[in-house]
Image (tube, rainbow, N blue to C red; front, top):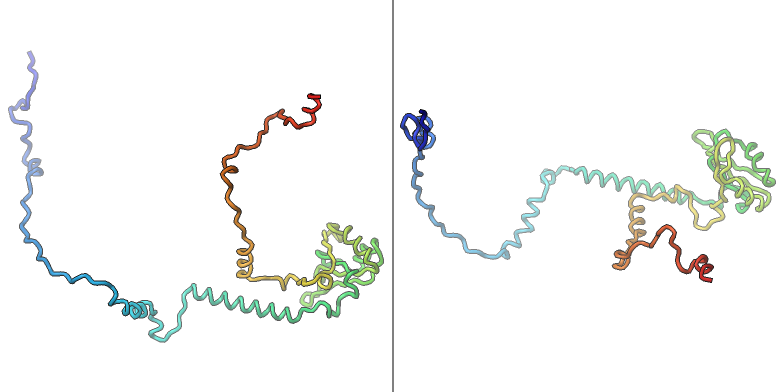
Amino acid sequence: MTTMQGGPRPRQGLPRYQMPEAVMELFRPREPLPYIPPPKKRKLRPLVGVAPLLDQISQYKQQVNRPRWEENGETFETPAMRRERKRKEKREKFLQWKQKLWEQYSPPSEPNATSDAQKTLFIARLKPETTQLKLQAELEAFGKVKEIKLPISQKTGLPKGYAFVEFQKERDMREALRALEGKRIDGARVIVDVEKARTTKNWLPKKLRTETVEDRDTKADKMKTVSPPPSIKERHSSPPRRVRGFRPNHSDRYRRNRS
């Protein structure tokens, strides 16, 4: 007959809480904390306002914010200061170049211009191999050509890619303006226009209309418009009814069926 083991004791008759000495060492309490006397209470300074110190703030700022290189008499600039200086120098150089072009620009006194600006046609995007004879052969289909100006670059000695063609009659020039838009000459699609320098008031070439980044940003800020927020009715209104086969009552088919 086997007996069932029960109760808090094992078969050896020892209590279960008696463990080996090495394990019991881990559960023994530590020594009590040593006694330390409380800290002495010190007498604090009375609380006052900051009004007496306001005069010293400006002097403190000058001493703290003053760079060391100023004390030694040296010159120094941060990367941000260097970028700002270069940007200002570049802008001043650009404005001087633009002012020089303004002084040299005088379209009415151009010696190489055509005689009559109202009869002159401007053609751009020409190939360098396009000659005056080729242009004359293409344009005489619209009328008699009086003169062709094909500017040559002084640096490369090649045509600049545009030409001024003067017709005998202004009507022929207008007809060529309508017909040549988007056409190809020597395989190149050209663009045509009237001469703007002597016919349009306050017109300037592209190099004189070039602006700096600051000017463009200022103009863009002025042109910005903020649209008003949608009203409550627009925000909560349902979309228009679009059902297949739906016809309003005012349609012609509805009137015919009613009659």
